[in-house]
Image (tube, rainbow, N blue to C red):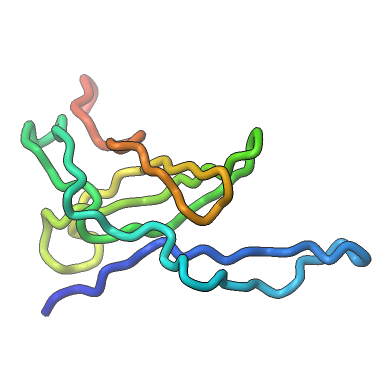
Length: 120
């Protein structure tokens, strides 16, 4: 059975001026998911010593921050190297950025990933 792909979905939050409370979440039309798996993304994995498609299966767990007029999102991407069971894939963290917050440009390689270390 093929596992369903997971993607990053954006929910916009508007701040109610009078109360300082968050108003209901709204999904902007026509832009979701904002980041979805890309089977073409590849890089040389330091652990496997081979080219891997590091975000081919899932993209999820986003965290966003606004800085200097840009929205930066770090999200988790999973490859399709393991069995189609949760927990059997390698995760890597990826950085994407956007000036508006709806159409993101991803870095071509992950920013945090497992690698060979001297103290295994």
